[in-house]
Image (cartoon, rainbow, N blue to C red):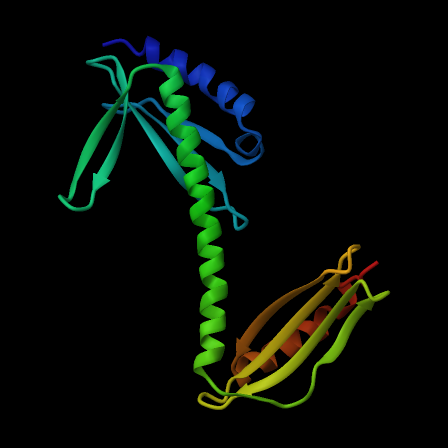
Length: 203
């Protein structure tokens, strides 16, 4: 059983992917697992918290000298096998899997925003004070903060509104929320107080 075809593809694959996709060139990485009954090439990106997120695995069958991918068929609960005859098919499979992964990541981010909005609709918030201007930059950027209490739980909630005036006079608004308990509030205040001098003002 020879791994000559496997080694050749491994050598060429990364360069091919970087040349056809700018996004992959920026964040895409691959690792080779050669010491296995069916060697494989795993593709991943490193998340912000240094966790590897794998989006594609290409297997190699040394007996039949062929690459393949496995897909879980949810309806029948078994893995199907799709053969990738040449390096172009492998590149296409990895490239499509990479962009599918990016789209799923964006969808998860959108769902987080939707869940945040749904939460505010489901609870009653008593805003203790009107919005307070935290930062403004010559009417182009304006950041306000507002503190409230969730009536059902007694937790605190901080609303942050960022309003940006574009050059064509379009107003862009971004709203985010942070919910915390009284105990967490005390810890947050202590952390901020002890590290305030290390922060830098917006320039």
